[in-house]
Length: 100
View 1 (cartoon, rainbow, N blue to C red):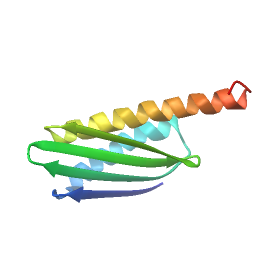
View 2 (spheres, rainbow, N blue to C red):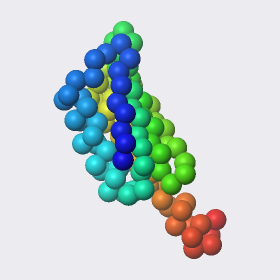
View 3 (cartoon, rainbow, N blue to C red):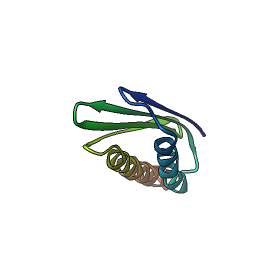
């Protein structure tokens, strides 16, 4: 999987990059077909924003989370992506079984 991590008004540290990649491991457990991911960390005054987009099975899944701590924002964004990946997989299974 190719991963691009960038920062807007913030320097993406090695620790931050490692944290994002660690969160992606959980997503990969739920969906082996993730082909790429793009993540942007932004700081606006007191708000830290984590945005993520992953490409999975011909579709893109996006999530954005805001918090006053960047690592908490990354956690929230990863949780949102995880829920969407599970929902996507449920729809795929339903389609394969002729229910959708």
